[in-house]
Amino acid sequence: MPDRSAAAPRRSRLLADLAGLVHQRAMIDPAAPVLAVTGLARERRMAAGEGVEAVGAGGNPHRLRQLLDARVPPACRAVISFGIAGGLDPSLKPGDVVVGTGVVGEDGRRAADLELSAALLNILSGVGPRVIPADLAGVDTAILAVEGKTELRAATGAAAVDMESHVAASFAGRHGLPFAALRVICDPAGQALPAFAAEALTADGEPDIAAVFFAFARGRARLGDLMRLARDSNAAFAALGRCRSRLGPGLGIPAPER
Image: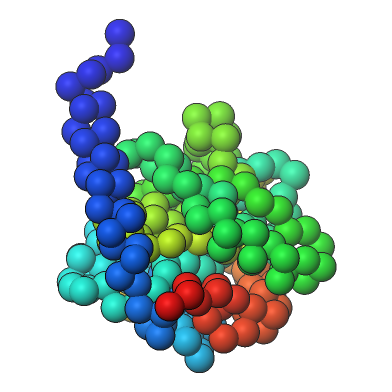
């Protein structure tokens, strides 16, 4: 039987998020920036620009929650999860673009704003080999193994996974803000990430070169793994850069009418 005692708090949180949605949505300042939620420092730098404030926490969802919780008031007009992701859909390759239709996490599924998603899809049409609308999975722990990706795909139906979208969607829901997500595939579903990848970042989301060298010294990393990861990462960031250029000010998210 389902654990109703565990499900009840999750339902209560979702209902609480919805309770003030209409009131809060009416108070959005159209002149406020779009908040781009990222993981890596490179993603954050890429997202920043006219009409955009970019934040990130180095791929640490707990620290990201603290950073977003400190934003009182939220001081933005919309929230977008922006960056690269791991593939769950076996048909997706490095550089393919996923515009989120929703985010599936431990608390259930949170839908993205349909209007914003449609706007992103329209702007990004033809920007790369493939641009699709699909759900994303949000996790607090990196999914490294192919088996883990396969299980997550079966459990969520999501096309890709990252460690920020569920945190960003929850923040947007609490404040009645429209939410969107744009993620580009880096490591495909049929390819495992090397174990050192989960530890090879500084707290600010920069590559931790010392951690990579330490992984090599301990035999936890191989040159072939690093070269493959670099190749896939280059493809993903090249596509993300094309998306960023196409989206322009405010990351392509239309401002609400006054």
